[in-house]
Amino acid sequence: MAAGVPAHPRTPSREVPTLQFRLLGPVSAQRHGERLPLSGTKIHTVLAALLLAGGRTVSDDRLSDMLWGDTPPSTHSAQIYTYVSRLRKHFGGAAEILRQGPGYVLHAEAGQTDLFTFEWLRRKGQQALAEGRHPQAAQLLADALACFTGDPLDNTTEHLLQAERPRLESLRTEVLEQRIEADLACGRHRTLIAELTALVARFPMAEPLRAYLITALYRSSHQAEAVRVYEEGRRVLDEQLGVAPGPQLSEAYLTMLRGEPLPVHDRRPALLPPRVGSFTGRAAQLSRLRLLLSGAGQGRRTVQITGMSGSGKSALAAEVAHDLADGFPDGVLHAVLQDGQGAPRPLTEVVSELLLDLGDQSAWGGSDLTELIRRYRARTAHGRLLVVLDGAGSDSRIAPLLPADPAAAALITSRTRLASVPAVHTVALGPMSDEEGLTLLSALVGPARVAAEPAAARDVVRYCAGLPLALRIAGARLLAHPHWSLDRMSALLREPAGRLQALSYGDADLRRVLGQPLNQLCQATRTALPWLARLGLGPFTARLLADSTGLAETQAQRVLEELADAALLDAEPSAGEGVHRYRFHPLVLLLAESLPCDRRYGQG
Image (cartoon, rainbow, N blue to C red; front, side, top):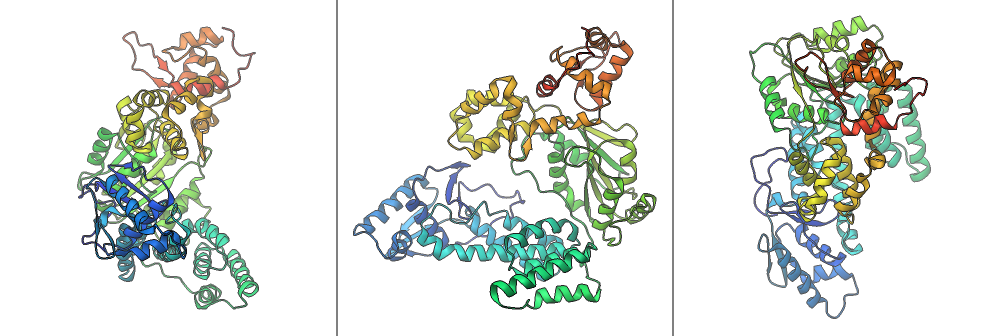
């Protein structure tokens, strides 16, 4: 392996290498973030073989075996030379391929190749695990797994795959199991159940994964389900392999049967969703949030991020919480306060989860909310914690979740400001500027595609109206269809009637996200919304809505205020005459226009 150690991916102390190589997925090379146009399985195989050697010479015979197996053509030496020459031309001096003896050697710094970064993170994570530093181990091993972007060595020959992929898949499985072990040691059994259930279904004969699932279920008081998982494993091993469960699986099962306490080695919670990989923009808001949340001895720090659905509140909260996590020695808690449909989750469930994250293993299933809150406040009374509360809907639901220690801090996301939360600072997220949108689109699809079609890129940004979620969905569609031009994406978004449908991909559906606040509106307000949409983007007033619908002006004002509270309208500062004016966001207007009108309602 070449000299040098790659920086931790989250450590910004080093510049991004000029060339970056990918082996843990489709084999590729990038220069300054732009993918080099390597064409064909054979040239990818030569690149992969040279990178896998880690700075050692790869002989002509080895390259021939990886390219053609036992039946090389008579011109194999000339063809290998041609592939190497093409690589040199693409690299342009940013990396060297030298002829050395009867072979070739590629000199690349360790930080340039995802495999070397993976191996460094794996070693550091395993060291942390052996030393009992479980939160650090879990994070390092998770970062190592994130280096995989698909099946390793995709787009190479079957000969290279047969020789090298099993080793890489074995390392991936090893790191996955160790990361799960570290997460269990941190008390994250509840959050592991869904992942382990899926893994056991995919790999039914993997005994370590089944043992971890039994442990996670047992710690979560699901003993009956744990017994079922064990019995199913015993049956599968007998039918498929004719063997009995091994020591690890048997010990997990017997430990549960004996009712032995299962130790959790580290009670310091560090439970945050991952950073958004292409997070860009919001520089001013990030700077202000860091300033407001950092700094000991400044009393209680409670900060709120507000903005309409899809404006990136959760991503911004995760970004700043990761940045500041080391400044909260007693840990970081994270709670999602809404379900997938945008409805408030039961407060007993949320408080129980927070107590579990704080190490209170008896909290799950508690039904006495007063008792749960009392225990939560006792647990947070002495500790410098950061508590992230994502998706707040009302003041009354937030107050019990604020940490009790004045040295702690809380970061809240909500569509609109919660007026009665004590000592709150508010950071509001409006639409991104066109330049911020272009930067985000470049980060999502690559600067080369944006530079190749600047006018179409600006159209895509304009149609997404400064909403990060809309841009991310458009970017996801473009990434999934690398043959698409930006002009094609722009054409899909051009017609307003089909724009929301075009901004849906996979699990991300802009119409669904924008429509979540509708479920919390009173019937009168929901009925008025499509009639209000007939007035266009705005601005409009209560008098204008009253004249258009036949509502009394006071009732029209209540409708507008409720829509503004749900972040379905933007309220403008009052004019000198004290009249309140409101506007639609362009994408919310499209949603409102698509709602059915009650013909008995409008009269204007």
